[in-house]
Image: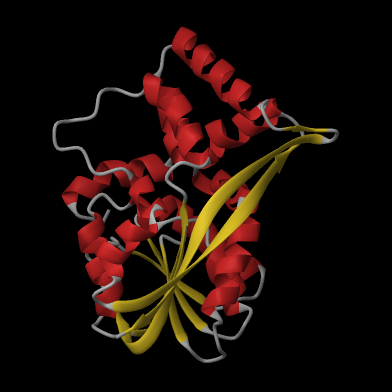
Length: 268
């Protein structure tokens, strides 16, 4: 947990719980990651930070374009898989534990910063936004993907919410606040000239039951929640999670459209 602030140690353990299987979650959003990398437009030799890199899917795409990539995350277990996968693919990427709200990098250290459905989950968004501005050089750029505040990923979390314990009095703000461009402007507009583009990611599985298996084994928030419940409540959560995904049938399985924003910013 070195480098992680005390209030982020519990979130780190939640994301850690997905382990190597979190890569299956990244596979499910690969189309949105490609979209974000396209808008970032990484160039050979640029220094780029992939913030909340998870198992490193985004960092590997950028490294293949010739950039010098650093992947940072609060989850050491996800980083361990990311390092193994990069090595297996013959890619040179630096991975290190890094708290988005207090990054271990110098001012202006990077030509660009990317975060694909990652920084939106920071406990203290104002601190994370300030760090994005601090580590990106003047004239550099950021590219983010964030789930819409009323889209199907938000609705999936609403399925899980009744099974979660009541939030503490000083609970962090909803990560889905990053799904409104007005909020992104509030957080980043002082440091970056921003532009937005909406996209749709298509999550495909052979069945709704397969979606439960993927998320309950690989997605930290779902796995940690399922593990915390007794057998009866876990069965109810499984039932409701499957029922949600059954709303999106195709002749070949399920396909859930999940809307997001791509935010591109130029550092002022």
